[in-house]
Length: 349
Image 1 (tube, rainbow, N blue to C red):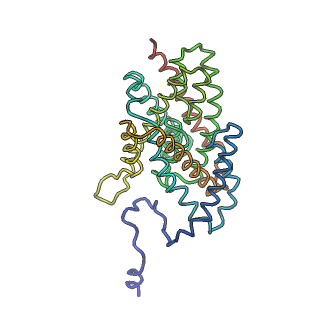
Image 2: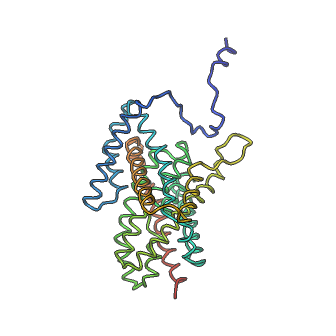
Image 3: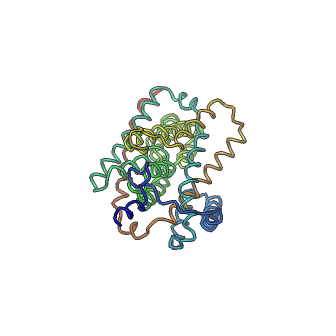
């Protein structure tokens, strides 16, 4: 009887080295409709509020998703919510590649590029150290530090997808999204005031704002609120940070092998897709209307993923965590600002 029971027990998935893979019940396309309908409605509402009042789309999607969190107990919504928070997210990450070109990055020059690379690396490192100091593991530090260092919510979602829910839970991801949204919105207002107080030139102010503010929209908003020249520099610097998302994901993957034993490290397909799309976009063969459409689609997919993630988040764990996780994000935020301010001295002339 024991041998027979053993033969009937399902075997673990070969690639499930860390227990990240969830069971995949058989579902039809109809099973996705209820959850995706809720996500679509929440995302459209977030988009309307963001357009009407000039609020950050990610923040609105997050708040609406949290307001709909009570729906997470309805099993009929589970397939659609899971699809939105994973599959739509991955495709959104791929489409982020249309926001940057390698030519824009090279135009910064070697000194500025070196400064950006150093700021990103140091910010992630401080996030990891702060997380360990406060009793969290390196995965949470990577998630929080990487979100601050690269491109806010987009980076948080990408890193969480790579790390897996065993290392970065839905509750931790939601906490990072909340902290990133709040601090990025604050930085958009406060950092230009600091730049004015220091009487920075357009070049220096643009670098400071582009190298330190979390989300793309807030970085560009802060830059153009300072001046048109600062806005252009902030856009290039910020998009350079966005371009570092794929290399950072690849480096993290080196420490978190996800392939089968003996096959080495597997780079996630959405990272490869990001690289490829950025490379194609760098050639200039993608028409401008197609680029704008891809950017809009990427924004929509990422907003939908944020909405679904917030709906699925375990609120009890969020409340239990308290403010400590936000201190990790704050430490990384202060690090990015201080280093970016110091790096402006390299940009004289």
